[in-house]
Length: 277
Image (tube, rainbow, N blue to C red; front, top):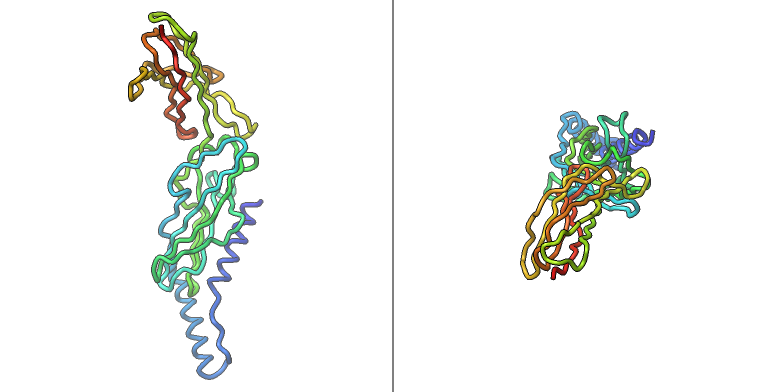
C-alpha cells in the first residue's frame, strides 16, 4: 500500500539523519572517549523522548478548495523542538480513521521539509503539497476527517513521530452559483421570476453537479443603494436549481447567496440588473 510504503521511507530517512554523529578521526585514545561520550549522549537524548511536535498547520489554517480540473498547491508547516535543535521533519495527510483504513492521501513529492530555525531549540519545517482533483479525492473526503502522519529529528538523535496527528484541515468542493431575473424589462408591480442554479465539483466524475436541498438567499439592491437586502430563502431542488417570484418595484440588482457548508465553500452569484418601468 502506498501510504505504508511512504511511512517506511519517511521514518527510515529521518532516523538516519537523527543518528548522524560526527566521526572521530581515530578510534583510540582521547578521540575514542569523545566518540563514546557522543554516542551515549545521542542514546540518552533519543531514549528521553526530548524531541517534540508542538504545532502542525495545513494551508495556514485556511480551507483548501478544489474544483474539477485545476491542481491546488498548499503547505504543511511542522513546528518541532529539541534541546539540541531540529535536524529534519516530514509528513503527509490522509483521510480516514487510521493509516490502514485511509480512503485518500495527499503526499508531498519531496518528503524532506525545508526547515527554518526559530531559535536554538525550535524550527518550523514546511512541505509543499499539490492536490489533483483528477486523482487524489473521493467525494467522501470533502470536509474534515483528515489526519497527519508527522515526524521530526533532533540534531543529537532525538526522534518523534505521530501517526494520527489531529488536523483541522478541511478540503472543500468548489461551488458555482447563477442568477437570472426575467422578464427584462418589467413593469412596476408585475411579477419577476428569479431562477438560478447551485452546483459544486464532483471529484469522482470531474464535472459540476447540482447541490441539492440547500438554503440559498435571494438578495436585492435598489439602483443607487450601497448594500443588498435579503428578500427570502429559496431551497435548491433535486438538481440544484433555484426558482422563486418577487414583485417588481424599482430598478435594481438581484443575486443569490449561498452561505456554504463544511464540505462546500460559500459562493455569491453575479448580480442580474432589472429595468423596472
